[in-house]
Length: 147
Ligand SMILES: [Zn+2]
Image 1 (cartoon, rainbow, N blue to C red):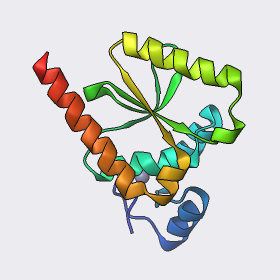
Image 2: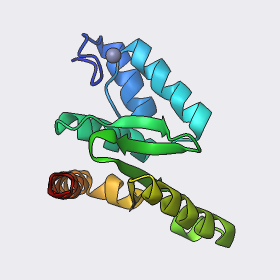
Image 3: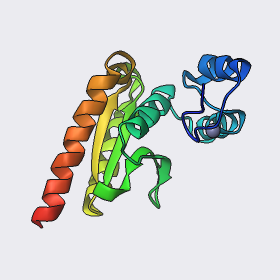
């Protein structure tokens, strides 16, 4: 058993603890790190799962990336893609809705594409979600080349 982040050996006890807490096998250091990220940013657990699934897929994602104005759940800087996880559509307020749109507009002006992914898609269709993001990355790469 190895840490999904650094590849270090993880003992069975640590494996179980990190799996239970985060749903991902991580060493002690990375479990602490990710827990701190969650505490500091109120990061949804689904973002953590997607982050490591993207890493597995060979993408170089960044977790809670600060874009100068706000923290983006996951960013893929090479193609200027921001990924936001929607925690709960029913809980969204009208202020939140318009703020999200404004954030997306500001990012777009800076050359960033923002996609919002419902947490349920990650929870139930992680592989498909990753496949679709890989497709978006390929599309963005093609656009960058075309310019
Ligand atoms: Zn580690």
